[in-house]
Length: 291
Image 1 (cartoon, rainbow, N blue to C red):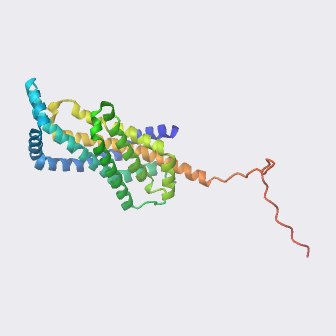
Image 2: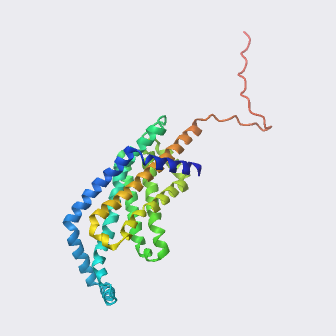
């Protein structure tokens, strides 16, 4: 628990470092350019497709007609943009996570290692291509879990539990791997992720709930949908900040535990007591026969 709290405050302090701030802006710029391009070419066509599909469904048509009958017809025009944004933002967030894993994570680990663990040996346990495949595999599993669990989001308590848990599991798997990929051997990484599974999963869940904070941007006012491209960029930026903090938290915790593991392995083993409870004394070498 002490290591969790210590790593948390160190990660929060590192978020004020100029290098961290710049690294948090870089994925934002890439994702923002992608969002602007997609919005420019596909926003109107996406709205038309969603509105057409909504009108084709009898259930949604009845619901929209009911809104007009109770004097809330203006909300009808907001349904399609909300659906398009609800589909676009998770995709951009996933791309942002991959950008963090590929761009930010290695540099943040280097920053933590240089400033705090300069003497920790880099044993290059995993190559870059394996880290990329690992991140992609974990991301696909998390996306599949999100899609399968969507019907359960209609149950009020579960919508507050399932998405943060899934994002937390994804952060735990990806960021723990990347934090240890450069310094730990494969056996060391597996040992640390096995022994510290619960604390690492706890970090992932906490940061998963922090990742839900950008959703407040959409809850401010429906009128803000006019600024949808700006909201997407702001939302992705908030996600990127959360990811940067998560990467720093995982880096501090994992590298500290790796250092402790190696110190325990290098410590000399104390002599074992014999059957009488007396420390064993090495036997003297046999005397040479007289010449």
